[in-house]
Image 1 (cartoon, rainbow, N blue to C red):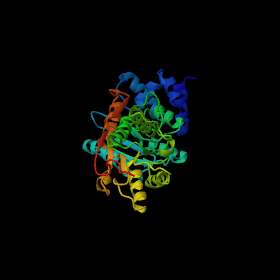
Image 2: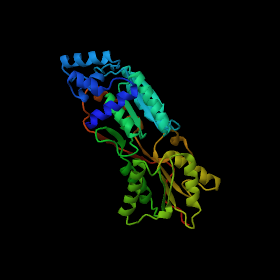
Image 3: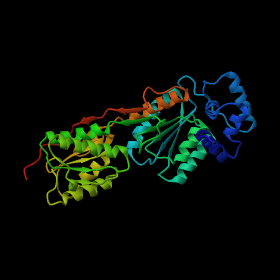
Length: 349
């Protein structure tokens, strides 16, 4: 059995209906052709479409409405978690496009749990979504296969790992952002620079660390592993990570926190010890979330175009729903260093 046929058969059996493979056999067409009809795409001849649609109706398969012009009936926006302003910025960008075009959006969080992801997939089948935007979540391969068999267009934003080659991705220039953050601190005269990383399993975390390392190497320095502490993008890990760095015999004079919320936690760790930013330690974050402009002091950070990533994700999934291909399967939007008051030359110790 061909791989595409096996995927389609498994997806249809999960619905308890005659398989798409069987419908393709009876119609005398390929499984991808049936998927195109199910998805409402236009690149099928009228005669073939009519033959396949008759079989779909006979066997109780629900056909999705086509996304015509710049419109689609419904999109799914799926996060791992919804507990941060980072997610809200993505939602804001998605809503900018969907509101203007009358598209409905279902926002879900799967919390990294297999059961939650499978429940979301059951709901997706029931509502016949026209496209899925997956944000940092890593679905099980079988669920990706089911999406493909259903003909549901998929775009991944800020991928957690290496996505399938046929899935468009949208991210930010994390490596250059990490390099810009570290380079800024080096330009101020800092030579002992700590790093609070993001989760090691995420591509963005690894890219920011690589940018940090590249900036140090360009300045003739090497990474001091004692100055690199783990984080998870939550404020608590920024606080504990900064405490770890402050407890070293020779603490760094500056810290690059690979996420704004961790930088806010680091500011709190310093405040609890009676230390000041930037007089006692300079801090740089990453994201440029709205609240860091109002932190004390306002945070120097790397602006990640989160809302723009959401907007582009919608436009890309709509193109896929119309049977078009994106201009590029891999897009990285540029990042920008935003200098505020949390960085200064190192104090003499």
